Amino acid sequence: MSDIVIQVENLSKYYNLGVVGTGTLSHDLNRAWAKLRGKPDPTLRIDQTIQQFNNSTGKASDDYIWALRDISFEVKQGEILGIIGRNGAGKSTLLKILSRVTAPTSGECRVKGRIASLLEVGTGFHPELTGRENIFLNGAILGMTKEEIKQKFDEIVAFAEVEKFIDTPVKRYSSGMYVRLAFAVAAHLEPEILVIDEVLAVGDAQFQKKCLWKMGDVSKEGRTVLFVSHNMVAVQSLCQKVMLLDKGEMVQNGPANQIVSNYLRYCLTSTQMDQVWKNQDEAPGCEEVRFRRISIQINDQDNNMITMETPFLVIVEYWNEIPAACLHITLHIRNEQGIVAFTTGSCQEPGWNGQSLEKGIYRSICHMPKNLLNSGRHSITILVVRDLANIIYMYEDALVFDIVDNRDRSGGWFGKEPGVVQPYLEWKTEYVGSKIPSQRLLKR
Ligand SMILES: Nc1ncnc2c1ncn2[C@@H]1O[C@H](COP(=O)(O)OP(=O)(O)OP(=O)(O)O)[C@@H](O)[C@H]1O
Ligand SMILES: [Mg+2]
Image (cartoon, rainbow, N blue to C red):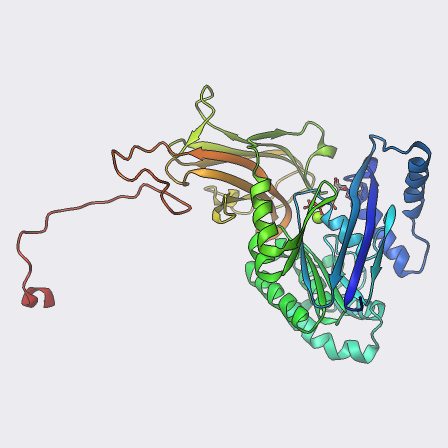
């Protein structure tokens, strides 16, 4: 059909686990730059080796992982497709294949029109070039003339709010500035297909809102948007259709509301209150920071149950690989409807003033008081934040736990009280007299 702009058939991608952690970024960047310079793809060799290996043995080795397995779908022109799934589901891999940053191991994807991508690794920018030069480079890659790019230039710079730094090499940009410019470039250079990976995880709330509006506008202009996000509220409000991936496989594909609510239910199937990683390379995280342990602990070890009246600790231990980094941990506590009950961060610690942390292992402990959350299933997403504003890693639903309702209602209402929180607040009722006050008195 003519209005189909992306057609993916039996797409699979195999990765060598030996290069996880150290290899991810450089491997992908090398490939992107080789492509830009018209050089052969340096990663093709590994894919071919895997292919040969596969053909000869017919089965996978333990050292490899299927990041994507047998994915097929179509996207129509002007659609906004949301792609959701837990960490490691294959979302970024799918976007990288569609953007031709990495090659599939098998299967096919046909894309009609120019793609502009904002991938999690920001592959579209050359670090040595200035913001200005990168805008022209990206425009040229998209096949635009110098004149066309010039017309868009001011709009891009204003949107990204980087006027002062436009002639600075982007390697000197903060990660927030980098992403702002990358988004502005991708969204304004009039691609037929816009591919956005996790932009909402980076940058401040104001900018995130601006990006969502912009994506909506892009699709109203008849262009197609593929949007990967962990923010279910954003996905639901922006996308008509959503695809749910899990462990490289497509679990569901359909109307946004239905798929998102299935996902929230399916995500929270079992509790997860303690996770430990002995090997740093296998731990969730990014190049800068990896988790070592995340757990919920309560005092009463015999009775491993959290009631509304149980105070508990959220413990996050991590390896910091950045010398002199200003880091803190933020928690997003969600209820079973996916509503964020509240957020809290280790920067609230008394005496915290943005001091830098040396390389090493750190432990942040958050004390959750009793009588705060309502009963029911909850999850905690853990974010690692750098320089107070830049989220460098987000671990969605890292902890999942139940809060049991054991409040004594003494014969009153026994159902679940509405509300995401159920704090015990201070109340006072006092006798103010037996007579109805006269109008005259009330006026005074
Ligand atoms: N370059 C790479 N080398 C080896 N393994 C990789 C590489 N890139 C991704 N993987 C693995 O492939 C799987 C899918 O990763 P991918 O980054 O696509 O997941 P994701 O859904 O984007 O996760 P997240 O929500 O954390 O961003 C994971 O198991 C990951 O460890
Ligand atoms: Mg990803």
